[in-house]
Structures are given as structure tokens and as C-alpha cells.
Length: 328
Image (cartoon, rainbow, N blue to C red; front, side, top):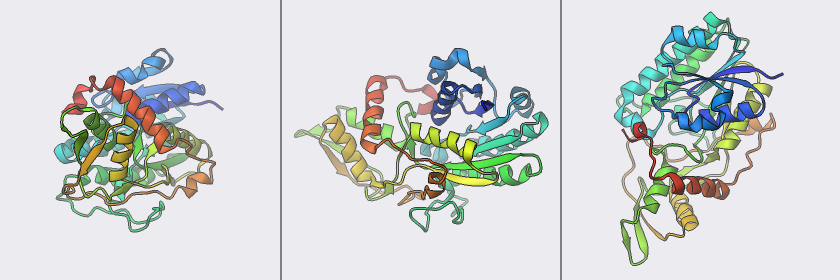
């Protein structure tokens, strides 16, 4: 049965793809986003098919009014981006913590029975098991390090989602996305930064481009293409259980050095990769165990090469149009 859903942060990267996919399969979609970090341009194709509400997620009264009649709220609104974790930890925490409190209370007041909350792989920091299952301990290594503002806010969000409103909801689910990428993902993540820096004509010498990376380059990630992740979110909600946590991502690890080399190869640019110091608190290895999602029929299908080609093509066409708030 098709549903009415409210998506907070629907103008964001993952949120906008989720909005468009749900519209495509016939859901009635309400987008709640003040576009402080989102971008309404991402929703231009479905502008007349969604209800767009300009609202700060921390405004509980307005959120309550917006979600009346919804069967599910999917809460994706957050201040993401590693640069923001270091530069704006107060804002990251404020939106993260007050936002989830607002959403849970609004769902209770409006009588919304189902809640889906986006968490993050950052809740593990340096996971002890790779591939990482959903069951290992969540960690906050150092409360003095602003990097952990995001992971810390998501740990709090999970606690609030599962416990603050535990007697109200019919279904509560948390998904932890792992290194999602794709076209139009902003300008503060490793893949778009690598693409734009590789395209920059400065730094060429003897046919090669000097290319500085943060860390040794041996750090690994398992990147998941955004369309696969969005399909996983929908499958999780439709087939997954109540009070459950799911990893949504891919299982193929790649080192950051090899990622840079892959981008250079696709762009036909010879990159002279130069290592540097890692940021304090950076994670050396990240790869999710997605067997729990596979049991629901989830099967990511977009290869890294294909996903990078699609992403590179978008940034090639749009490299002159960064969103102003993404460059703060």
C-alpha cells in the first residue's frame, strides 16, 4: 500500500534522491527543509509533485503541523561534512540533538506511527571488526575533539529514537549509511573534492599533477552509490522489523590512494599522489557488514567505476556552481 511520508532534510544529497525515488513509485511526499544546507534545485524535477515546507527541523510546532496525516517520518536532516564537524561543531550538535527531540515529539503529537532515522558510520569511529556488524559498541573517543560532534549527535539520536518515544511508535528503524556518493553530493566530501582538484589545471609538471591527500593513502573505505542506498532505505522500511538497526552501504573496500588513482584514470590525468598527516580522529578503515540488509533482498548493483563515471560527469558539468552554503 502506498504511503504518505515526510522527509526531513529532503533537499539534501541522500534526501533528494530518496524524495525523487518515492515520488517515482507513487508515494505522497512532504519535504521538510529550510535549505540551510539543502538545495531546492535538487527537487526541480518533482517540484509540482511534492509538498515543500520551509521549516527548521528544531521548530517542533511547525514540524508537528507539517506531518499530520503521515504514516512515516524519515528523518535525514543534519549538518554533515567533515569540514563542518571541525569548524561548526556547535551547529552540528544543535541541529542533531534538538532536531531529533523535535521530530520524535512531533510524531507523538501528530500521531505518526512510524519513524526512520538516519544515523552514520561515524558512531563507530575506529571499528574493531571489519566488515563491521551493527552489533559492535558505539564509541566516542574524545569529547574534546570537535570531529566527534557529528558521531556523538547520532549516538544521541539513536538513543532518543528508540527510547524517548518507545511506547508510541509502531515501527522505529535506524539506518547507518556508509560513505554514500554520487552526483550532486555537495563540495565537502572526499570524492567531489578529489574530482574538482584533479580537474584544476594548476599543479601540472612534466605531464603529471601533484596531488596531495590527507593521510598515508592506505586508509580504506567502502563507497556506496546513492541510488543503491536509497533503494536500501525503502526496502528496509517496507520489509525490516521494528526497533532494528541496519547498515546500508557496500562491501568492496578501496584505499584512498587507489580511489584517487581511479578518478585520475577516468579523467585521463596522471596524478602524482603525495601523502600528508591525517586529521586527528580520522578513521583508518571502514567497511560495513551488510548481511542483515541482504536478508531483506538488498543487493547494491552499481560498481565503483560506473558510479565514479556518473559522478565525475556531473561535477565536470557543474564545477562552476558550488552551493554558497557548502563553501562556508
